[in-house]
Length: 354
Image (tube, rainbow, N blue to C red):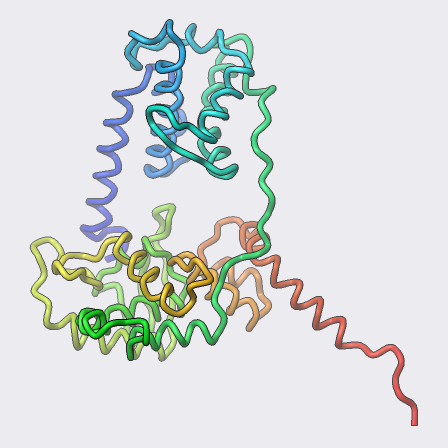
């Protein structure tokens, strides 16, 4: 159950193996930096850092003739100590757009994220007196504007997407309707659960049947940071979960090792994160084609609705599992505009006197 389930144990093991594999591809000083980060970072974060550092060293090897024949693991501190801020700026331009060799294109937010571990590496080397100057101090990262236009669904759109699952949609062919009917109960339970609790897609994929308690209308989840938490659901979520468990799920013969999963794929295995994302996009495209709806947008929809109902930002932060309440405040700041509009209409300065 929860973080002690076989799913999460195996997931943690696979992440650790992947991280160790990536370490073997990096120079020793980069490995030392990542070791220094291990106590305060999750495995998924460390893997992301390792990939981003690999991208940087591969860039150096490909764009500097003196490193052309040098293995990445053989890079030394001297090799990076001679870099200046202009070299780092040029790397930022490479991250923004590259059409030669490994093609990619990144926005400002992605560039800032990919530059973060590199900034940390140079700061680590400088603080430990491995290098005399830190070239990153003169490099400006992209300015990120806070996006107040959070994409979410309104009540009509929520009803429309759930009805498309349950009854089909005019855009569906008969063949599509027949195919969707095979997983109607599962899909309805998945989306109702996400819309009714704000659960993350990764938390949803990791649910076991034993995590659900219908007596308390609750279920155990494992948060992004690895901590265990309990969420509660209403009668509408309870109803569709019961229908799925007693219906489609009861007919499944699970593949070995997947017996405890709550939600299954058509291959009778635990449903994957990608599969959940794809089914959300599939149904959303039918009813809200003007909005790019993902599982995270379902989470936004829930958080927005909860804040509108309660006005309690701390409650929203707690239910959504935000460790820092500022994340929630920034995320739902746009809702305050609605409150301001209501305030403008609440007071009449000049009243009619009879």
